[in-house]
Amino acid sequence: MPSYDPNNIFAKILRGELPCYKVYEDDKALAFLDIMPRAPGHTLVLPKAPARNLLDVGADDLAHVAKVAQQIAKAQMTAFAADGVTIQQFNEGAGGQVVFHLHVHVIPRKAGTAMKPPAAEKEKPDTLAEQAKKLAAALAN
Image (tube, rainbow, N blue to C red; front, side):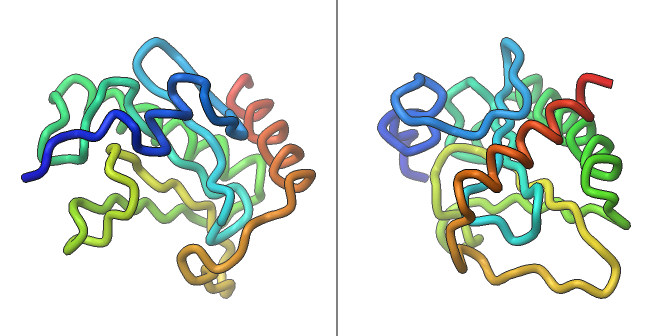
């Protein structure tokens, strides 16, 4: 398996070199909105530790990411009046991974509404900012 690349886009976001629409952060994880969401509120949860994917992440970091993903999912149910949540996580190119820093997609869903295709279109910055504020507020409750 290839090694972790500290110059991947998520590593740059973690170091503050690139912006994001942050909804949650603690000492071990960061959660922010996907700029090409498959549904409104589509959030990415990643460990702060340098982990390429599920195959090399430490067990404690993986458990923490799962815990944060659950918190995000619960908040999305309220913030976006979701009927359910889709969780996705991809490993290596053959498994569908595009950015090689472990991340979990947490996508709020509405019954009868299909998700957009992956990377279909960038969402408007104002929309993402409003959604991030709404989800962060739901997480604070």
